[in-house]
Structure formats: C-alpha cells, structure tokens
Image (cartoon, rainbow, N blue to C red; front, side):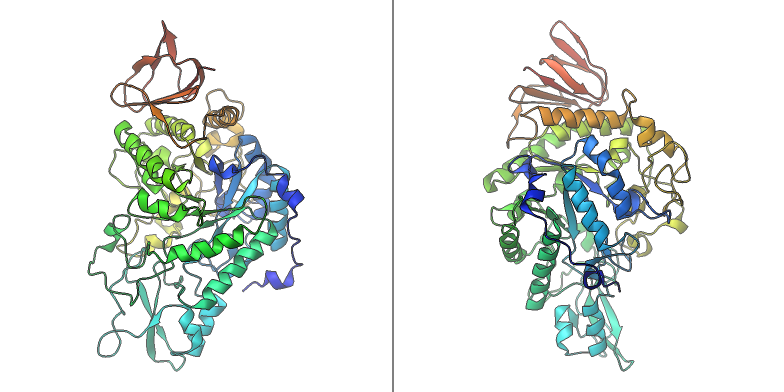
Amino acid sequence: MSQQHSAAPAPTPTTDAAVATVARRRDWWRDAVIYQVYPRSFADSNGDGMGDLEGIRARLPYLRDLGVDAVWLSPFYASPQADAGYDVADYRAVDPMFGTLLDADALIRDAHGLGLRIIVDLVPNHSSDQHEWFKRALAEGPGSPSRDRYHFRPGKGENGELPPNDWESIFGGPAWTRVTEPDGTPGEWYLHLFAPEQPDFNWEHPAVGDEFRSILRFWLDMGVDGFRIDVAHGMVKAEGLPDLGDHEQLKLLGNDVMPFFDQDGVHDIYRQWRLILDEYSGERIFVAEAWTPTVERTAHYVRPDELHQAFNFQYLGTHWDAEELRTVIDRTLDAMRPVGAPATWVLSNHDVTRHATRFANPPGLGTQIRLAGDRELGLRRARAATLLMLALPGSAYVYQGEELGLPDVVDLPDEVRQDPAYFRGAGQDGYRDGCRVPIPWTREGSSYGFGDGGSWLPQPEGWGELSVEAQTGTPGSTLELYRRALAVRRDQADLGAGDAVEWLPAPEGVLAFRRGDFVCVANTTGEPVTVPAYGRVLIANAEVAETGGEARVPADTTVWWTAG
C-alpha cells in the first residue's frame, strides 16, 4: 500500500490569504454551482488510459470559464479499486494511478488561484479490505481488539455456517462474508453493506472516530474547501444488528428507515465534525450523500450545527412532469427552510444514468437503465431541465459531461464492464459504467482528447461531435447553453438566492414562477404553449416567438425572463 503521507514532504497548510482568493462572497455555498469530476474519466495526462490529477489540473481553466464555483472530486485515495476508489486502503495517500500528494497539493493551489474551490470525497462508512486495520484484524483473529473496529460476528447455525443476520448487500447477495481464520478454519463473519472488499467500520469504537477526525484535519490543512460524505446515512447501525425480516430489502431503500441506514446516531458524529470544520477559515463545507425516506428526514442532516448541504435525490428521481416537479420543489423548500439550509438540485452523477438518456425513455424505468431511447427528445428535455434546475433557489450540481449533452453509453460490451454491482446477482442493476465513460475534448484522436493512450472504458463512435472542441463557439450547442446560463445566473441576483418561489398561473404541464424581477417558465409537454411575455428573454433552450405581449414556448423548453 502506498505510504505517500509519510514519504512525501508535509503539505504547507493553506494560508488565510490563499483561501481569500476564492472567498468571493459570504455563504458562497448557499447558491453555488458545484461541478462533479470523476477522476478516472475526466482527463488523462500520461497516456495510460486512466484520468488523473494532473489531467484535472490542466483542465481547471475550462471549469473556470464554464462558470462553476467549486469542483467536487470523486475518490482518488490509495485503493485496490474494487469499487472505483470507494474502497479506500489509505485515506492520506493518493493512488498512484491518479498521481501523488504533491499533485493534489498543486491542483488545490491552482484551483484557488482560478477562483475555484475544491471539495473531496470522504468515505467513512467502510474501508477497503486492504486497509491496514482490516488486514491486522484478520491476522490477529477472533477476540482481538483490531476486530472491534469492524463488525465481526460469529455465524448462526450449528457450525456458524449462516450469516449473523439477514441483511443484504446493496450490491446484491448477503451483507456478510465469512473469513478463514489464521489457523485455516472457517471463522467469523464481517459486515459489508456494499462489496465484500468494503468492510463496514464499527463507529461505536472510539478509534474510528479519532481516525476520521484526524483525516479531516489532514485534508483541511492541505487546503480543501469541503467534503462530500459518501453514504452519509450509514456508519451507525441499530443496536444488536437486528434482522430486517424481509428478503427484498433493496426495494425498501429510500422508503423506510433501515437498521443500517439513517440511524439517529449519525448526527452526533456530524456535530463533532462540524466543530472541527468551523475552526478553519474560508467557509469550508460538508455535503451529505444521504439516501433517506423523505426530504424531511434529509433536512435532519443540515441542521445548523451539522452539515451544510445534502443531495436532493428525490429531485433527481423525478420525471419530466410539471406536477411531479412542483411537488418535489415545494416539499424540498418547505423542508429546508426551518433548518436554514439551502436546497440542492441535481440531475446526474456517477451512480445514475445520465438525464439526457433517462428523459429519452418512458417514465418508470428507474435511474439505472440500459435503453438509448429517443436521443433527440432526451437531449431537448435535458437542456430544459437544466435551465429549470439552475433557476431554483439554492445550490446546483453538474456532473462532468452533462454540459456536453452526453448520453449514457448503453451498449458497452459485458466484457468491459467494471461496476461491481454488475457481477453480483439481485443487487443494483450494475449499469453505472455507462455514465462513467471518459468525456470527449476534441473531435479526433485516440480518445477524443481524453489522453494519448485510449480510455479505460471504450468511447462510442461519433463521440467527437459532442466534444468540447466541437461545441465551443457553436451557436445553440449544449456547452454554450450551459456557459450562457451560468453567466446569467451569476449576473442575476434573484437566481440561486433565497428559499422560496412565487408560483404563477400556467397551462397544464407548465411550471411558471417568479423570483423578484426574474421569471422562469418550463413547458414539460410535447406541444407548444402560449404564456404571457414576462419581459426580456434572458435565455431559452429553444426559439421563443413573442407577439402582442404573449410568448409561444416550444415543447420541452424552459425560458428565463427578466423585467429589469
């Protein structure tokens, strides 16, 4: 395992002056646009087919010019990569495939110099089975103090041959794996809510909390501006690890409080973490990946003494339907207002089918699908959905490549797939590879500008026509739409700010709301509609015709107006 944190020169803690270069305004995170980089698939600097930190660093000016406020990096820590880096072997080291700690330090400093903030992933629910703690636990055997840092239990049955309880892995199959003890005999079982290579920490053990508080300080001293907390609803398990009593547990996720998810004890952890974060200048933030039954329960994670933001998965899973969207928007704003936290809005990420493909298909297929659908329809709806998202009060997240209108790659050959869920029965659909295909930068080249040595997942033919090069300066391109929308959002004080919208009368299938001098109209129907012309058109994803004080808004189109 790499030991960069002991071999590399100690990073110089970021000074207040350096942090001030990105502190453009107070409470920046309340209406920030945050861009997710999936390091494997963003840019490859050394031609090995895998994206890396130097590749990201070289492309930072592109992100500045796009108009985002911060960059969230998915894990780049030392890892065997059993789950694309979410199985961490060393939380203070960079995996050699991505670079070194010095590369991370340079990336953070360059980002700050460009006015961008850096948010890194933190994975506290589980480690890799190659983490030194877990390897020691296996070697020392039953009853050792090292095993108390994870959930080791004797099995049920006459000879301990059955799992300790009936919990199922999110990736399919049992959530328990039996170990072979140092003497070669079948032994205890350990808990892993995800892959067997990802044993869950036991957060009842004080050493676990101590270790993660130290990890937080390590990266804060490096200068990061915040953490996105993976499986933020995990970590704490119900006392006694009780049986769930249901053998279709995955269907319950997001609908019920589970004995292993969304337990109240997680909030004590976050209150401790918040005290650490608040010691540092520069308004550093926490972002929760918290899958909860309701947006009201999500709000518990962003109370004033806990985390700053939580992903709005209810919004991500909403269909392109005006009534559904309005319901989720209202519930989100109503839930966040009492705790004083901003709403967040997101349409795509590294775990779900890109929204340009989801919206190309009929509703009801879920967030991981393998159907291309109507590509033209999906792109039109995706562009309109983006303008709607960026018009709402709060913070918005953009997943790399969505600004290019990239679809999911739904026809990857089975032999190239790497999603661990794909190889385990009865788990997630396992089609996450389709949204992780490296993005295209140029029209031509071995990997369309991603790097000089191909790409770790094959890119489809025609990818070059969706590239940054092909779309830059092209009127009507999705990239230019994003650039324009983000520029307008920065210039319009009413965009992003606040915690409420004023709904306006609108035809069936149409959303219309006012925020100060700003009005947004989103037509989710398949036909043009006529609405009042609310002022000067700022931006739209299709041509809007105005006559006699009225505007004809095409199908699947969002329009921004200003009366100012």
